[in-house]
Amino acid sequence: MIPLRIGEPHKQCFAMYHPATVRSGERARGAVLLCNPFGQEAIRAHRLYKLIAERLAREGVDVMRFDYYGTGDSDGEDEDVTIEGCVESVIASHCELIGRTSADRTACFGLRLGAAIALAATGKMYSPLEKLLLWEPPLSGAAYLAELASAHQVATTRDYGARNLYDESFMRLLVSESTHEALGFSITASMNKWLSGFELEPTSPSAAKNVIAFRENQSLPSGDSAGRRTEPIEWRTVPERVDWSANEMMNASVVPAQTLDAIVNCLLEPI
Amino acid sequence: VETSILFGPNDALVGTINHASSNSQSDIGFVFLNAGVVHRVGPHRINVKLARAVAKLHIPSIRFDLSGLGDSQRYKPAQNAGYDEMAAREISASLDTLTAKTGVTRFVLCAVCSGTVHAYAAATHDPRIVGMLLLDGYMYPTQRAKLNYFWLRAKRRLAQGNLFHWLASKAKPRSVARATAPAEAKQAVPAAKAGDTPGFFAHRPEKQEFAAMLRTLAQRGVEVCFIYAGGGLQYYNYPRQFDDVFGKLVRSDRVTSLFLRDIDHTVTRIAAQQALISAIINWTKVRYRA
Image (tube, rainbow over all chains, first blue to last red; front, side, top):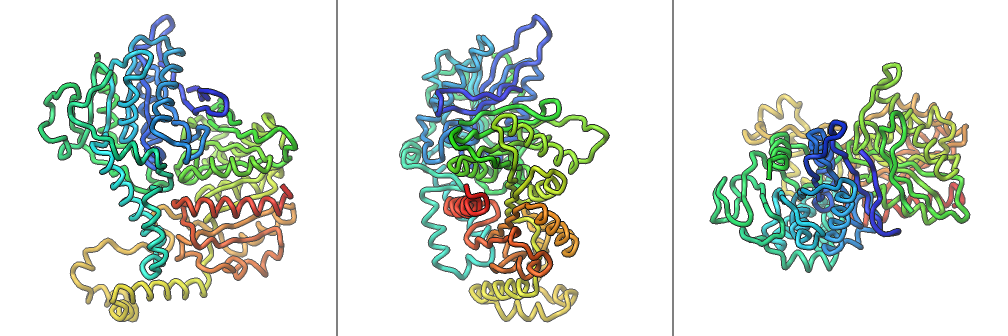
């Protein structure tokens, strides 16, 4: 495990490189880039991402996870985050991964908004992805924003305990905030605009050779059923439902075991 | 400029150093600890924001993950040390690292929730630690705090329109109240008691014992600021609550407290984050002439 800062000076992203565990003289089976979800979801998914990386590395795969510019341990502030900037971070991290591994086969994984960002980045990478795995990608950016706004309101209402129910001015303040921040992170005007226009169709095109999307059973896009291939995205079901848009954090690291297995196995599948 | 490194025993720990500016650098360095299982960026990235705010005062910092948390790896401890002892040693290792990278020799620990215990344990044995900022650690409810909280709940019941039913249930012994409660109330999940609110940390040593430890730290010159959030009203709910408990027992202006009514335990709202950052920057400027 090697911590890195990648990108231009003063605009660097934190990245963690997990070299493949291979015998002397052997080459890695491939390389995988992990793309974070947004804001609070990234904090809750941090341990899951570390475990995915460690398990893949033990199976002989080079792995890199990273924080987009303006997020996590990277340079930049919340207000600097744009989807275009996130896409640039993906491309820079992918370059770094290829440069470190000389991998000729790379795959990418993204959860929630990370899936949408990874999808947007695939056409801009210097070498095409063999596989893109999306977990719970938002089908509609507007619905995703509404979900975040609702979660923010629930969290702040609950976290302020007894006070919120009789302090009307305080309640109005909480409601007004949910249009430009969600669970502790800014939703910039640029992000809002991009997401408002985002729709993921079951047949959304991608530059990746194989695109696989995981969703829980009940929420597959209409027209699909579990296991049925709909070009170019292959939709699969996962057994566990995770409420990602929640504020729990202190002792609420999210590692759904069966889905972790499914993600690792899918990324290890021969392409 | 920030750099991310491996350090500590077996290079198992991962940290990010903010080097601040090299011109007129302070001799104080900040160390940011994990809150619960949240990795080193802190709840809602507050550790990153605080690191950059203190860097503007020319104060470098390190934020890192204790072993087994965040990006840091577990390792076999020397002499079968327990987790708390390992945490204290790892904090000392972070001080060594920040000294090696930036030259600072005195340190302020900044911790939230369970991190406050590790900060406190480290400060009692490492003389390089000259300050602590502790958010929502060591809360001691007073009679006034309990009455305040009762009054807050009564106001909530009044707003909900069931004040009298609630007061009547309070007046009954618990066994009677449960036996006469509506069926749906019996099936409901029991209400959280003080000390077991999810995500909240309520560990505290005996008052006299804690006061003695605070006096020892104050005599050593350690500045301690206890910050309490308005999200934990069941434990702390008025500005001078800490003074009511410890004012006469500690008697030192090095030990202070702040009640930030409009912030919650994990500084969820951006306005709450800004309020906390502002309070910490003000304290730092006053205490260290930064």
